[in-house]
Image 1: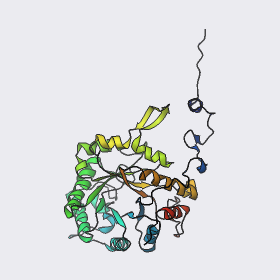
Image 2: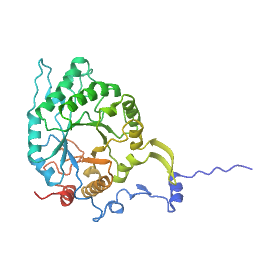
Image 3: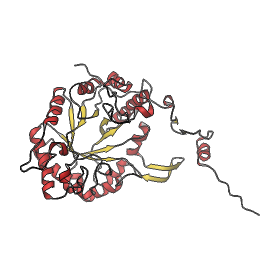
Image 4: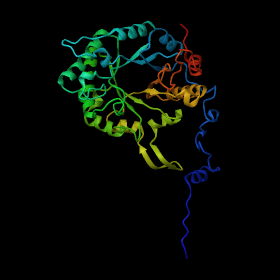
Amino acid sequence: MKRVICVISLSALLAFVYGCAPFASGQNPVHGSLGDASSWESSGQNVPNPDFVFGINTHWATGSDLDMVVEAGAVWVRTGVGWDSVEPIFENPPRYNWEVADTIVRDCRARHLNILWTGAYAPSWATVDGTNIGPLKNDVARERWRLYVRELTLRYPDLRHFEVWNEPNNKRFYSGSVDQYVDDLLIPAAEEFHAAHPDNQIVGPSLAYLMGSARIKIDSFFRRLGERGAFAYIDIVSQNVYEDFPDEAISRFEEDNCSFEILGWCIEKKLDALYQIYGWNGFGLHPVWITETGWRSDKVGEQSQANRIVDMLNRVGRRSRLANVFIYDLRDDSRFEARWGILHADQSPKPSFYSLKDIFAKPY
């Protein structure tokens, strides 16, 4: 008698598990049609606590752009003029250009905005490959990085939060090893920033949540951080996370990332839950900030972008360990196709701006 081999498609199997017909193209059992925002997004009653605080990535925004940040109800900005812009030319003694930084800090102070200052990236003269993302090339460069952080604390003594780098596991933003990140960047910055004031806090490592395209996987990066005792230098764990839907972004912290799951069982796992990775490597008690999350309005639509941002803030606000979140981005950049902003390039508001304003704007 011949054996009969039955082949069941994944969609048919999931249809059986979830007790429904096979899913149409573009659908999944959790969210329904990816093109139909009304099938899953927050209702008007499901909004964040208006007392919840959040931030916005603002790059070099000043003046009226920061007025829009305040009007949207945000109280934090993620900004910074990196070392490469402050000391672009090697001179002895060092000569710094603080003009843009002075304007940013002055305008943030005038609006009572809290600042997360990012130090990335490096001047080309300081790196082994002449780029602004390469590892530092010698002791002179390492000392100049230390001096940049020291001068930053002296010039802005009320600056309390310093982010060492952005996405050092992403090949687009850093090409050094974890040890180079720790020895060249993290430890010198932490020593200088902590010495300047007892309340100063180092934020990091701000890894990208990437799977196949990650230069260094998140679990490998944190494993080495733990082995090097980096938890003693970092006060707040920061993480960048982008997903199609807010519940997926939050689940990256709380649940294993499974590529195949049946009846709640993870059959094939891509990555452990971020909280587990943090805890295994000495960061189990650190508060966590989401330093980048957001949605492109040119991909999901402007109203859907607004709904997802509000839903994300609602979910973050219900989780005590997620102490802060920075929406990416304040304003579209006309030089690029991607439209991440809650404002158009001409500063006119999108629905996401109005949604934030309706919930969070404070009377002054």
